[in-house]
Length: 203
Image 1 (tube, one colour):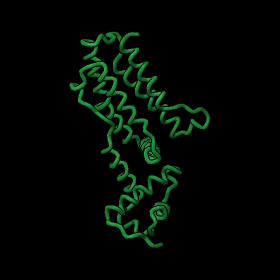
Image 2 (tube, helix red, strand yellow):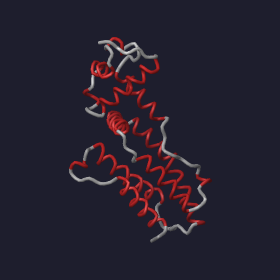
Image 3 (cartoon, helix red, strand yellow):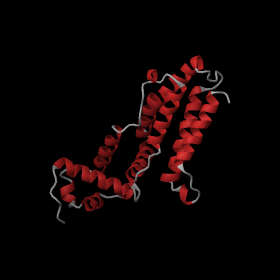
Image 4 (cartoon, helix red, strand yellow):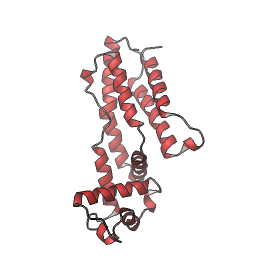
């Protein structure tokens, strides 16, 4: 096997991309380093010059995605209902923006999270302290300034709203439910946002 000459950082990225491509096609636990090497167009020995194990490769992929966040605006900069709605739309649009790479990453994240639960907890806390915290802050602000419903359980409503879109995405793109019943994710997002604001505004 003859490898194309690459700089070290480019070779590492090529291995990560090749691994993610494999994850998009088959379960992570069935992938071997020999397959990753073949997908990367290098020998398995060459692979081990960059990574000591499959686990290390997976951890590098997950670490890369930690730095790719959905659009976040500080709560205090959202001063109108219209801005609040745009913020939510932008965040969810980023969430449902499906590429083969993102689908593979979500599959990997689910598999790793179900394996030991630790990563799932970390991701949950990131969303709780990020997107959900901003929603909670602005809903409380909206109860004082925008006429939002005073009689709702804010924390539960936020999670029901977010999970409704996220689970649609996972079912359609990860569990391949679209082969049985297909939905347009953009339409799902818009209906979810509309329903959420109906709750907030007591419609």
